[in-house]
Length: 370
Image (cartoon, rainbow, N blue to C red):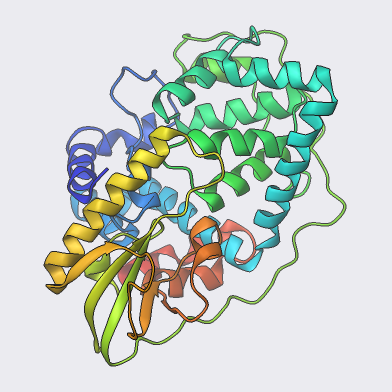
């Protein structure tokens, strides 16, 4: 999991599948076939490659019109992050629900049996079982398969959505607190209240090219509801970069220190902080560790200074700066005194992400032209 690998993946996508992206992106041909999506999300999730450079590369390769659908999908990731920044209770509520639901597993044998069958891929539902096994074995699922899986989990198996979101976050190599939490809420009908996503057998047959034909799905469920949706809060203000010598703290939400808006700050020391989601799989932990090693090596070369784990008094008396950590595990463990710098991409897009996606989508031409 390195920046070089991410750039290679971007080049391959632009050369192979990019031109056909809009037409083919919903089709899941299976883990052994060439991806119909960009497969850039593990690198974007850690910002080994940035949204800005990916969008610029796609528009350069295909023009504004040819890249429109792909660019919109990149902005969905930005939207989810900005939305969670202004609705942080969606994350903390999810954590509380997942903990409570794990407690229910011990007390409710029927629920536990269904849950264990689901995560082991032993439900007997064609497709669903394959996706459960693929997720655990590879850390990856096509986006359409994620939607089908979540819908079947919630509406056919009647399992708590938070346990499903937790299962994904533990195993996905691109597991992102914002995208994962809000996508599961959207499928359930909680993100846009009353508007849920329903997996239908015909749709699964069509977009898996007849690989799967599930039976007995609940195709007419009601959306879930909750007593009170997450409250909106103001987008927190970012800090300004100081002048002079600083220590730079890297975290898993932003591992491209070369492009951080550091202003007149001079980086003389770099530390890396790894905070995983609870229960993260060994594959996810290994990917995170590799990504951090790569970022520390690049930072040491870029700033010509020492770079290593942020342990003990690693920064000495230096002021510590870091890229803004969105709501999630990294943000939860940042030292209080750290100065948090926000990229221009987020500064421009997040204020447009507090409600539905359409507001941000309409601004994409202006944002990408800036």
